[in-house]
Amino acid sequence: MRMPRTVALSATALVALAASEPHPASAATSQVAHCARQEHARVPGAAFQQRACLDDLTTAGLAGTSYTDLTDQAGLTANGTRNPSGVPGIQIDGYFRDSSHTNGTHGWNHDAQFVVRLPDHWNGGLVVTASPGNRKQYATDTAISDRALAQGYAYAATDKGNTGPDFYRDGTRAGDAVAEWNARATQLTRAARKAVALRYGHAPRHTYMTGISNAGYLTRWQLENHPGLYDGGVDWEGVLWTENGPPLLTSLPTAVAYGRGEADADDMYAAGFARGSEFLWPYHQKAYWGLTQKVYRAAFDPSFDPDCPGASAGSTVEQILAPCASDASYAYADRPASVRRAVARVALTGRVGKPLLTLQGDLDTLLPIATDAAVYARMTDARGRGRLHRTYTIQDGTHTDGLSDTYPDRLRPILPCYRDAFDTLTRWVERGTQPPADHIVRRPATGDVVNSCSVGAS
Image 1 (cartoon, helix red, strand yellow):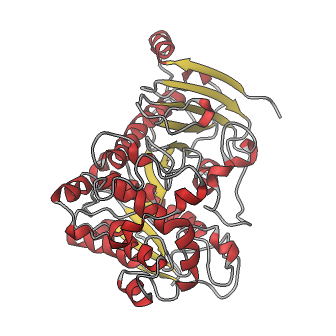
Image 2 (cartoon, helix red, strand yellow):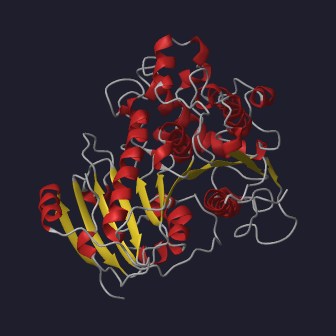
C-alpha cells in the first residue's frame, strides 16, 4: 500500500496559499484522478490542519494509523457489522481556535478538533456529524463515515469542542460546555462546505446533518436553528434538552436512587424506563447512570453539589463511573431559575426547518424513549412541523449497539435501520418520496438483523 503524503499547513501558510492559487474550475464530473488538485484541499478558518492523500479513507484502510481511533468507537457497533472499504481520497485533520485542552488526539492537546474526508469519487453531497457522548472526532468512523464515503459523500466530524468525563469544566458559566457543541457543529458545517467547494470546484448540492446520542441532539438543534445550512438530517437517539425538564436530569436521579436501593421498579417505570428493559439495568447502573447524571448536572447546575464531581469526575475508572450520592435526591423542578436559564440556552423547541428522521430503540435504558423521542415528536407536532418529522421506534433496540452482542436474542442493533433511514431521507429530499409515517419497526423473526433493516417495515 502506498504511504500517504502528508502536508501540515499553518493558518499563516493557508492565507498565503489562498492568495496565490487560482480558484479551481467547476468540476465537469464528480470523478477525478486520485487526490487531484490536492493543493486546493483545505478547511478555511482552521487554526491548524494537515492533509493526506490516502488509498482508503475507511476504517478498514485506516485501522492502526493516526487517521482514525478504533478504541474511541468501542461499543457503538455490533460484531459482525459489514462495512465497505476501498474509498480513496484526501483526509484533512486539524482544529479551530479554542482555549480548552481535553482532546489529546495527535498529541495536539487542543479541542475543537475535526476530520474532513474528501473521496475521489464524489456524489455531490456532504455529511456532517459530531461525536456521541464525550468521545472524539473519529468515534463514528465505523458507524457513519465508512458508508457515507462509499456512497460518495464528503464527510466531516467534530469533537464538539470538549471531550472526556471532565467536559463540564469547559467555559465560565453554567451551560457553556454544551452550548459550545452547537457552535462547533455550525462552524464545521460552514467550513466543510467551503472545503468541498475548493476541492471539487462547487459547493455541495446537498448537505445532511446526522449523529448518535449527543450528536443526535445536535442534529435536531441544527435543523431548528440553522436550517439554511442543511437539506435534512437523521437523528439517532438524540438527547432531549428542554427548559422545563430535560430527561437526563429528571429520569436519571431515579436511576441513581434505584442503584442505591432508595427506589424500586415502580419508581423506574414512573420515570419512563421501559418495562422489559430490566435485564439491562445492572449494566447501566454500573456504566452509565451515575456518570451521566453527575457530569451533566455539573454542566448546568454546578452549585447543587460543588464537591461532587468537583474539579474532576475521577482519576480511575471506578471513580469516573461512580455516582454522586447527592444525585439520588436531585429534583430539577426545585432548583433555582438560574438552572433552567442555563438549560434554556441549549434547549430544543421542535421547530425543525428541514426534513428530519428520528430513530430510537424501545429498550433505550440511558434515554428512555418515553421521555425522549416520544416527547420530541409531540414538540414538532405542537410547532406545526410534524410534516417535516418522522419517528421510527426500533423494537429491541437500545442505546449502544454493542450490547446486542451480549444479548443477541433480546436486542438488535440500530445501525442497519439508521442506514436505511438515511437512504429514506435522501429520497425524501432529492426525489420528493414521502417517508413512512411514524411507526414501530418490528424485529423480523428471521434474517440478518446485524446488517439488514427496513424502516418501512412494521
